[in-house]
Amino acid sequence: MNWPKAYLAAIQRGDEFVSTKVRAVYERECGWMDSPPPDFPYRFDEDAGERVVDFIEVFCKRSDGKHGGEPIKLSLFQKAKIQLAFGWLQKSDGLRRIREVVDIRARKTGKSTETAGVCQYMLIADYEGGAEVYCVANKAGSSEKDLRRGRKHARAVAATSEDYAQAPIRHLPARKF
Image 1 (tube, rainbow, N blue to C red):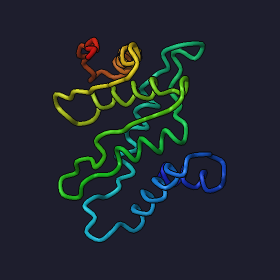
Image 2 (cartoon, rainbow, N blue to C red):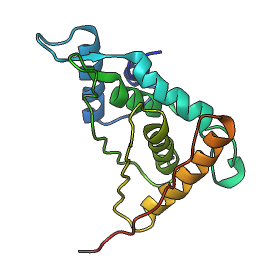
Image 3 (tube, one colour):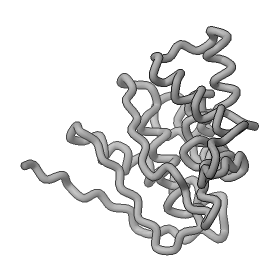
Image 4 (cartoon, rainbow, N blue to C red):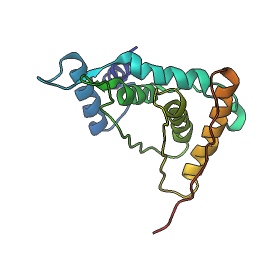
């Protein structure tokens, strides 16, 4: 499933409300999928992006509240964003085009849960030996909250996979400047 195209269609129908800038990004990215600029060094691999979405929805569980322990169900916009970030690959070597994602959303919209799932994927399922993942937040305690969720996700993945060897996950306290 091409989640960015599905999300753009929902935006165009008026089912999803986004800023002009977000709409322009999805129009550009989906346009490049169909007809990339000449000598465009990237290709969009739906399966590479879908792998991350599937990992989160299959292996990661919600960690808090009345829904704690239930599988994570990503929203359309989350699936689209994740698939865009992980689906664009360089034609030459298969490395990702997008190396950094800035996510600005209101409180209580699932950022920490989503971030913990993406971090778990990058640590254990991204085909990278010795992976290191850094999660940065501008509010004291936010990155530690993501870490706690990540630990819970790691335990859930370990319980469902014989091949998963859990490495220590730790929080480095923020330094104030």
